[in-house]
Image 1 (cartoon, rainbow, N blue to C red):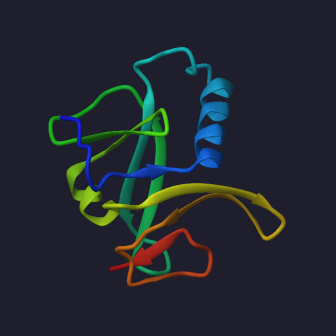
Image 2: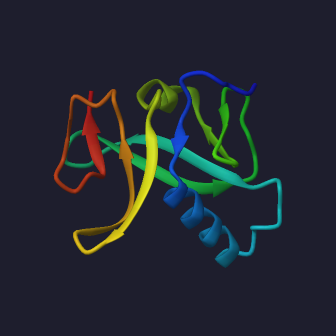
Length: 116
């Protein structure tokens, strides 16, 4: 299933960093691999984001393609991630991936966990 509306969005900076990391991992030229985004319990606000590379989809996965990047999430995580944008910052005040999640009622100072 490929979802088209209310997906997970990927900024240009995040896309470029993901592609670079895939290259470093030796999987950049393998079309079977994609970015898996998930939500797990934990963190200072109750829920944390999880990013990983994967090459196997599961029956209830939601599959998106945005900005030329294939992003997959499980159905439970997707309920928390509708219309979320993945971005990347390499500035002085912080370096790494972060999420702009319109579903989060609050997030922690580190930006790695949230609550709904």
